[in-house]
View (tube, rainbow, N blue to C red):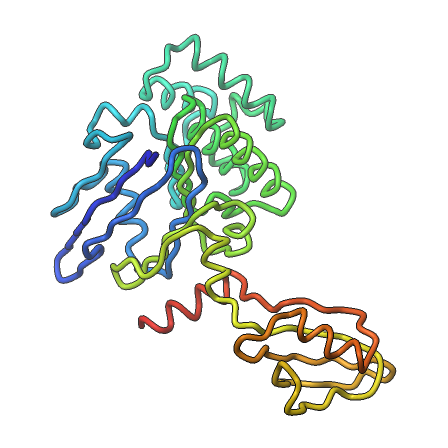
Amino acid sequence: MAMISIRNIVKQYAGHRALSDVSIEIEKGKIFGLLGPNGAGKTSLIRIINQITAPDSGQILFNGEPLGRHHVERIGYLPEERGLYKKMEIGEQILYLARLKGLSRQDAKKRTKYWFEKLGIEGWWNKKIEELSKGMQQKAQFVATVLHEPELLILDEPFSGFDPVNAEIIKNEILELNEKGATIIFSTHRMESVEELCDSIALLNLSNKIMDGNVKEIKNSFRSGTFFIEYKGGLIQEEARAPFSVLEQSNLGTHHQVKLRLNEGASSNDALRYILDLAEISRFEEIVPNMNEIFISTVNKTN
């Protein structure tokens, strides 16, 4: 079932079209990657889901009903440009934001203490945002985003400003929130995070949706039957009976490496059987494009 149904959204600013008839389905309980180069329309779409701006046409459904103001308390939004008040004490600021999301002061204080302890920031209650590093400000903003236990989390570049250790901590918290039932929209330029975290993605470019679907299925659709092989023995010669064509080959002393592409109708087992008659194989793996390569090639085709 879709938690968020984005249907034929159009958004036009003065002299610039941000979104052109964009439709996306985001399944309940999944982590969804919203991807695209700068200026693709991602931020415009996120602002519409958060009801910061309205579309010119089209509709968004939240659990099957038209998105409305009463859904705000069920959404948590971590913007790329962080928005905490620099002069205000962190504890009171998070309590204030939690009250805006419908929590009582007592519940807000209890949950804030829980998250501060969980993230090891108990001593920050009376600190001001301006006293913290960018990464530590991020932690405080993350707490403010998740404190009211939203059904839908929208995270725009959530790892920006974090060192690898704290990025891992926040990644694990995101996964735990998802395991507990939160649906997550995850916008990032870090394609390794997409492969690691996302179930499905949509790729926007120049205001249009140019790709969407399950991450594994998208990667499989880009398979081209190319393989990397390392072996001992004489150089593999491309013969008429070979079930492949050799793309590249190199000599590493006692070992050789070859990149090959299967002929139409041939399988990896056919290639293995052919090569095992000639050489001793130490490594055999299919070359499948990663999400970064897929992102670049797909965007370049539509520019």
